[in-house]
Length: 169
Image (cartoon, rainbow, N blue to C red; front, top):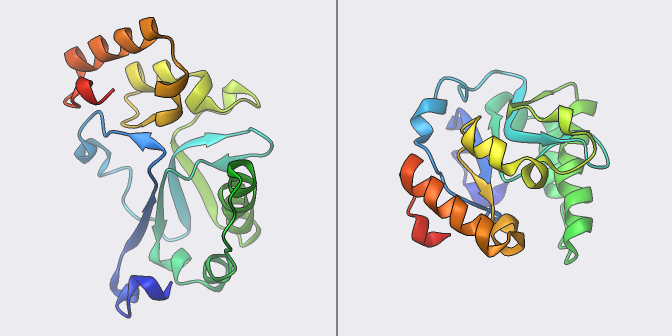
């Protein structure tokens, strides 16, 4: 937490984001109301039941009451370098949700995906999340795994429905 500076207590919320996604595909101002900090609620874009219920860590909004609290600070200070992705996801993505719930913090997804079962929703229903639910981010893994036909379909859809540059896909 020291990296955030001495004025961290003046922030209303802390947004954690990583580079596992591309976007935003749509303006984020449409999410402004949904992302208003609520005292004891951490909000993520999507949730997953893969292995255990958790918020996916590519975008998390953490209110001051949570990030200034001891459970979050303890979790953050105990993070260590891990170099295997599945270990990182288990220890830190799932681990953060686990620690938050244990501390009595509610976790909530803007785009609930629990009906997908135990698969990663950002891989299983990525087209639905993008097209129908207007989730502003797309996992970069999709670009590496999709067929050339699916990528062309995605580029065309993005070109017609998003302000994101389809050439980046």
